[in-house]
Amino acid sequence: MTNLAIPENMVYSRPESLTPIHNHYCPGCTHGVAHRLIAEVLDEMNIRERAIGVAPVGCSVFAYNYFNCDFVEAAHGRAPAMATGIKRVLPDRAVFTYQGDGDLASIGMAEIMHSAARGENITVIFINNAIYGMTGGQMAPTTLPGQKTTSSPNGRDVEVAGYPLRMAEILSNMDGAGYIVRRSLHDPKNIRLAKKAIRTAFEAQMHGLGFSMVELLSTCPTNWGITPIEALTWLEDHMIPAYPLGDYKISEHLAAIKF
Amino acid sequence: MARELLKGNVAMAEAAVRAGLEAYFGYPITPQTEVLEHLSARMPELGRTFVQAESELAAVNMVYGAACTGTRVMSSSSSPGISLMQEGISYMAGTEVPAVLVNVMRGGPGLGNIAPSQSDYNQAVHGGGHGDYNLIVLAPSTVQESIDLMVLAFDLAEKYRMITMILTDGSIGQMMEPAELPEMRPVVRKDWDWATNGAIGRERHILSSIYINPPLEEETNLRLMRTWQKVQANEVRYKGYYLDDAEFVVIGFGTSGRVALSAVRAARAMGIKVGLFRPISLNPFPYAIIDELADKATAFLVVEMNTGQMLEDIRLTVRGRIPVEFYARLGGIVPFPDEVLSEIQRMAATKKFDTGSHPRDAWLERFTAQSER
Image 1 (cartoon, chains in turn orange, purple):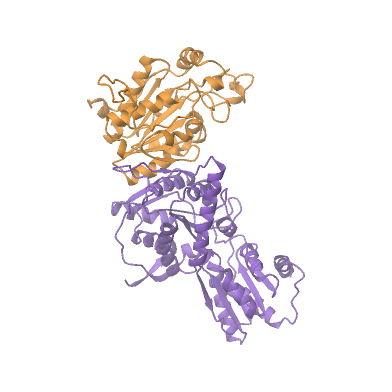
Image 2 (cartoon, rainbow over the protein chains, first blue to last red):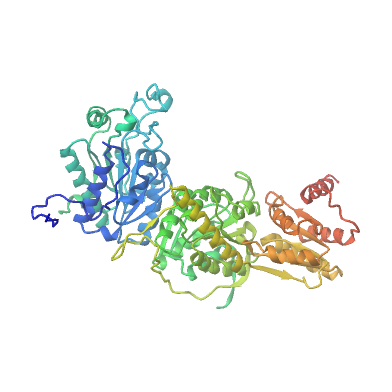
């Protein structure tokens, strides 16, 4: 008879904060990694039951299916406003948004800026893959100069389409922000650093230290038109020079906390 | 509670507080700003939530978030701001969450002006946002009624899990009248079985307006429709004046209903058998009672501060049985009772009504001729 019991040497399993639902993301997409990191942090901080997520419009529109916590689905770009409404009436909950670059840096620019300016005590996970995924590969506010997309077929011409937005740098100027960093999901070392940042962001929120955002450089092999491995290399070679990784703002109160 | 002299906007805000409002999100816009100003002081004083949002768009989405937690929440605005809120209104309707919105209407379209108008009737009653949905729409005509309907609005919103909109205008919002506020109700945050307030010791809740699978969206549309049928069956509200022996019935809501009442009283003093029917719930619309009135009356006169938006709903009910006449002032102008009285007198003196042209066109012709005199 086969022993189906969990082996004593189990070292890796699904976090309780993730549902056992197959996700719809493309092979090689880093959304799955980002989801898992958030779920691990919710588990480790034991805040799954108190967590309320806000899903965006974009590839992660169905994120609410994959997290085992309460979730709402916002209109395009409005996740920080919706999160504000939730957090203000339930201040002891862990409220987070999960937003892509079109959602956060284009249509939702006003909502993200003012949530940060108000110091809304929420956590924002910002997936920057320099392209619109769900609608099939159009130019994003974070598309790199010269990058080809279905709506910039000759490459992003900054004379016509303007320049990419560096959201971590922009938001770090907000007095209401407590923690603003940029990380990348292109290799295991950076994934570990990304998880640590997500943990710090949620710690900032649970300590009432204001607005926190982790920008995660991510891949979109499908719409970039390259293989998953090539995508990881492309991210490292092209995105990191344009979007330098680092800590853009860590409030002194947060820096003093040990966890 | 004693009667006191209260400004319409302040009265609505305070009534909401006393009805257990826990959170308000809004943006300044004339002529509703006193709602926001009053709550900016009152809500923090009571330990409740007040946020001045960066836009009406953000405000309505904050309302959406708070509504998902099952909290009593509202926003208020005026016409252009309500247009910006249509996105959130549609999403909330699709998510089936309760909230209260106030539209203190002003002249439009576009930036228009800040004077009283009723030109958002269609937007409130017949849509506004995308998709198939309904709002409960209540139209007060006095400060007292603004108070009473505000309290009712929260109860209805929660009972049917939908938005209730108070559709008022700059006249009622800005005027001061004696009115009585209700007693302070305790704030009761109900633990609704649908609310996303943290999955503590229970399965997770998801609130969304997305039904990517069309059969599930159809099911949602059907559910919204069935809920609306219940609202139609139970929540029709109106007030009739001098209708028992009325040959002529004036129909108007809110401010135009109030102005028409003065005209009706003056006409009665002249011996004209005229009454007033004032719909209070504009949605659900009091079709059945208007249908009955159409069987008894000689003719209707619809008075509005728009180009005949409710007029179409009246005509739909009357179905050509009796003449329906129309009178309006537009652009932020409130008609004088004398203007309505002249219309009543003209109708009382009319032997044969011209039913050939649309009442709006006939009114425009009369109105143009009169202006050119």
